[in-house]
Image 1 (cartoon, one colour):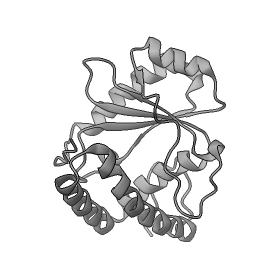
Image 2 (cartoon, one colour):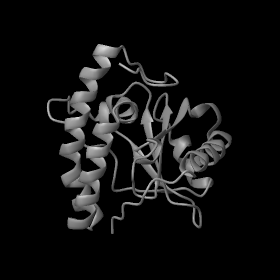
Image 3 (cartoon, rainbow, N blue to C red):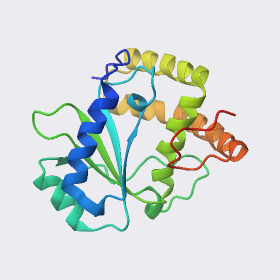
Length: 191
């Protein structure tokens, strides 16, 4: 079941705590650990699940072993992200490993993606665009609430939400070109 909740002030601190554990677990194998998804956008209602992106250099089975030794559980049926229309279908650009929280921990989705791949840039640009565009974030929140009411089952919710997210992605790419947005900037451009 999909439940959208009001924004929680604790989400940023919960991400930081999880990121510290992941940094300790993965060391230099994790090039960067970012808070992504709706819980990373202040004021945006979301599923109460912390989304984390772990960017790596190359695919190395050792990363998966470390994650599982740390108690994180791999979601083996998901091995790539949704590909927006017109984007290259290359597995290299959309491949990921998805892990979920350790038993008994707060809910989290941990997305392992290759540094520089299209699917590693997508959530960063999406997040920063929504942070810079509160009206778009508010419209997205309305959509998510409606979908969670009408499509309670998680897979159907995601299938219908993906094209709407793609519309935001295309607008965000144009915004990025106009503003000079680059990943990993501390705050998004205001323009």
